[in-house]
Length: 102
Image (cartoon, rainbow, N blue to C red; front, side):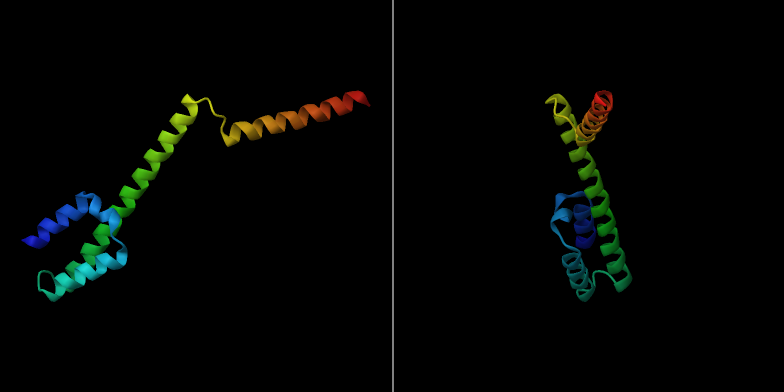
């Protein structure tokens, strides 16, 4: 039963983010050696944790990106796209002025 408790904790807790794949594999090997799970369960355990880690990482990155965009909007900071659009408009205007001078 301790393995199930650990698994639930790792799947739902922040501890997962602190573990590398190698550390997870080592942990699984330890449980296999102790006879608390077989090799297939160990592989599934590591795979499940890696999948959950990737999902959590993607969600976290999305939240960070949304928060940064929100803060930039509130601070009235121009985005790279907006700046590039302005540069293009300036280039176009310079060309028009040059053409008018001819």
